Image: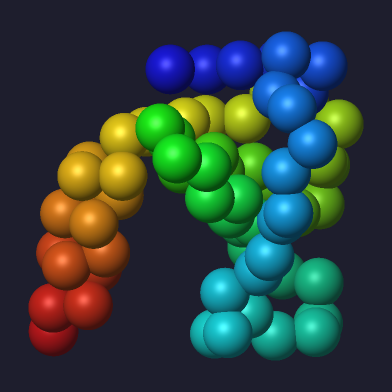
Length: 66
């Protein structure tokens, strides 16, 4: 689900602990009861991408695999 920034209620955004301070590619995540919102940290005014918490957990499990 893609949403416009104005459609998302006030969320607490955070960057991954793996993100560096050099301004490279990075995303920010905000957790909500029914969705996990993801956005580009370099252009926060663009829309967000939202997935269910179950889908986010599955993604993290795959991302952690070597």
